[in-house]
Length: 365
Ligand SMILES: [Zn+2]
Image (tube, rainbow, N blue to C red):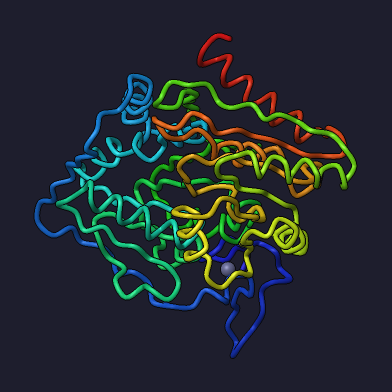
């Protein structure tokens, strides 16, 4: 075997022989039922109702995307909070009207469920199916929302695939998942992200740099100092801000800072993540988190502080996503952004330059 048909692996050291047959060890872990060939039953009604209208800028991107999205691969670069979900709906309606098969891949299983619920409430006449690990009884539907790890169930299936946040873990730089995605698509794909990286290739690039509320992106204030001064500053900020997400580099530091500030902590190891998030949303003043909450979450009235922002885990994209948690609602305008660090580094510089560039392009100042 030169190339694995399931994951496109070509590394000969990953092919083995069992009972005289060659198999691929790269994708051997992806075991489970495959979706049957999907016959569309009768005529479906892919109309949707969002309950609100797109802004002028969103509508312009949506029109362009609807024109281009079935012709070639498109990158939609939309700043955090710009409404990237809403601007692909018209393209999806067009694809479904043409009897095409549409999938929507997102990074985290929790986001699959949230997005699935949202899309089902908007596309009332469609069967929206969420496919995640441990919940994959139903594989067939009109619109399939899934994680990258479930893509292997759909070889050569999708005419249109929405790839939501391709720069997020675990999809980013994961050759195996990229291979499996490629095998699942027979048509075109649309990448949706605020922070595209160099590895993406596409035919068209659309840019949405304005949030619906028409305010500029918040540029972080940088505070430089040694660690003890950073901690002092952190205390002051957390007590003066209304509601704060404190981002720290490591799980160990999360617990240390959480103890110091006497506030709850969330990391990838927390067992009751959803509960912690809900509680912070409704009651808590501050929450210490690792980069686990860098994207995919919206909290009303939140400010963010990055503690030890010079740590290599805070890449440019991570910082941009973190700053993107702030000022997302129409009504609350007091959210602030801070980065506490020993000294500037390239990631911090790049983050600030990127945010300023978007503001410059969108508002001319
Ligand atoms: Zn393979």
